[in-house]
View 1 (cartoon, rainbow, N blue to C red):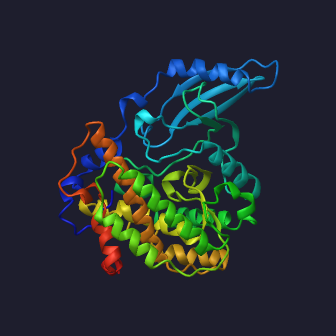
View 2: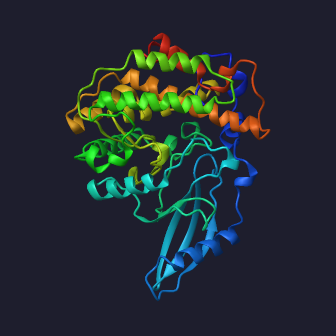
View 3: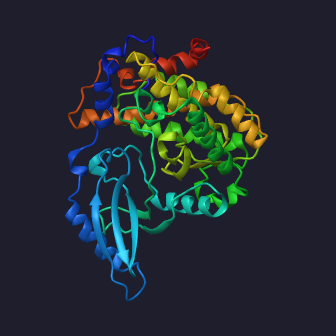
Length: 395
């Protein structure tokens, strides 16, 4: 969703805030929506076997967030047992009928990752209660975690278009930025990551940052092949994959736990401090710069849209040099090759967007463009990164 501000080839698909909102809502097929009354009964029956023996459980106030359905499904509900009220969240794997964004959804790994992060760090991860692999209860595997209240930087409309983030003072945004980088620092400081999170290790991955990243690139290429299995391919994505493989940094430092989807839109804040770090489906082992690159790119993603919409955006927020400096001050580790890792983030987002657009086309919400690469809304930005001209525009 973030084409280069100077791009005219995609301006027609992203030149208004209405189109931005439409893009965020497409590819949510109607058959992914559920009846909340039926969900309440199903959850209540299932939880009766999970709460302490002899307890009576009641479920109420089942709701589905408006932005549900892009990846795994989120169900909000309240449950009471033993006289205690529990605000809860169920994360449910998507069914094949919804054309999932990813080929597999290992919710058990997400559950285990959250539990381990909560146990071995001070990162504010919601408590996880139960993981259910049997699809009978809700139609697909799911897990249940506590529900926490807080402010989330919105995606629709993007937080830099006008939100509590833009209304904050520069000092408050600096505090939010500092605290968000500190989350990454704490995650990367978890000791024995390859042992504690061995279930996240990819095939042929070693324990060094380079080995783990090489395995990640291979997984990314396999994901791309799955995404384009209909025969329509992307010259730009294939060029980017080749470029990433050719320029893979030599990094013999130990691999760390990477959050994977390390963007501020996946954090709940109170008074600009994180109170809940969410969405762990992209967690992996790898170089710490992967998380920093993703955090920086997802902000650039929205900044480029703001430029097309002639909005001021937040150009002084989440800047790559500032993230690097803050991270170095907290950890003592000076990040390296960050422009490379931002480019890798842009590549990863391109493949995800390709899949999302393919879903929209399949469900009749969009038409296939004449140029396949127009399915990548930020194609101009990715191309400029590969050409080495993107960053000079921001200098």
